[in-house]
Length: 574
Image 1 (cartoon, rainbow, N blue to C red):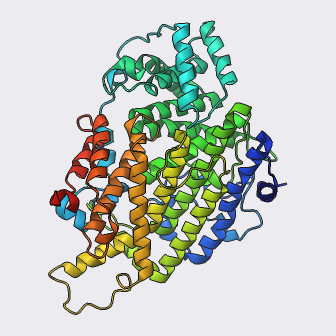
Image 2 (image 1 turned 120 degrees about the vertical axis):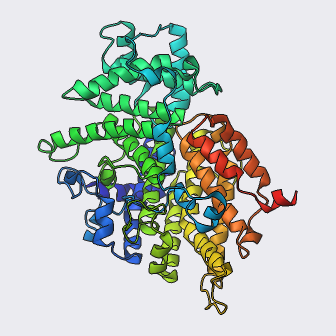
Image 3 (image 1 turned 45 degrees about the vertical axis):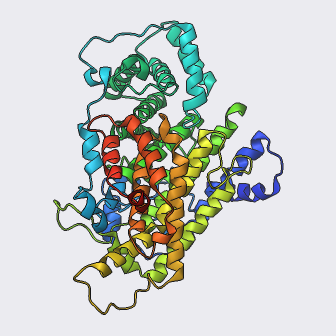
């Protein structure tokens, strides 16, 4: 039975099963994937077929081996329209959803000046790593002392705080690695690297230490030897294992906790390429895809981390993304891990939906003509070429799919909408993902309104303007209001998450800046101003949290500088 059929049957069972035992709960997760599979039909009916130029650009740096359907991976599109084999879930290269794209908007440029599209990439590229990481090979490898009580506490911290976000392996699997480390069988094996990464993450996730240069508080005395071991294995092991992939993903998590997206992405990309090589090496030996649980969890973490970085920085692709609709889902192998697995799959599902939003609404209409241009391709061109009715239809369908994703989460774990307190960070992340998706689904309407109002106010505008279908449409105003509500609700929810280190710290800081820019543009657009609530207090709260991480010449410092320059009417009236 193929996975499409199997998931469809599980989706039907979802409606009938009433108990919440481990098997029933995990089976219910299939509904999330089943929804995404069938929803792609509606999107393909509504959107025009992508031009050869846009698809070529979107796949320009994927491995050619993965650009076509593979006979050794089960296709979740079996039995559907052949058009669904197109890269429906790929984020297009040159997409217009980057937070830095908002800095190129005319109204914003008038206040902030010019910013290149890769502004934040350049900042991160130049920012040195802290402490021991800045001199990784300048001294002999030093093994950290291992006090049993200390490493027990750090391991507990890891599985309590870090593991729920990225459940790569079970505590029992980790214990086998740790036992070998404590017996000092072979210290320079990948199991040692994994243990040291766990201790480093257990250190950095648990404290409130803000000193970027405090090696001990950051757990660098554990992470430095871990990184050296895995990089040595990466270069010189000619048959790398899934354990090396896991170690690299732990390193990616560590760099994410540091707020270093490029280094996090680099570790993930190494892991993804090894995984792809492992899959490729087995393709002639498998009659069907038979992946171990550790391999599935590795794949999906690579997929989600890489897609997040593509969405934020439009970085080069490893080739992992096109397999997102072909790999089966992980399952819970430990009764204590059921909730983590549900959250993990739910987040993967909305990441795929976010990819579809990028592809459907933010794909560049034409290639840039100048390689040195400051401004990216104007997304207004793409939206205008779609036409208002098609844009309305696409956004409505995507919004419907977002609501179906939300409803598909089991009741006992589904985060309530709004701003009520939630029990844990995993629920907070899902709620933030929901409002981030709701925001970018409706962003085109707000930006079109801002652009048209700005053009109408310019001295060169014609005295007799033709009727504007955007400004005169109650439906468009409603879409703008939804975008504004999504941005402000996101900001109120994200405050708690940017007050501490997490693997989402950099992502959430970028989204904060994007939301505040959107709200500032809305407030400075007469037709939209009534929909924007007083912003001074929430702007101050965001700035207070971001300043904690704003070391000199960092992205956080740049975001603070940008947000500080945006004046809202309530602050001007005060």
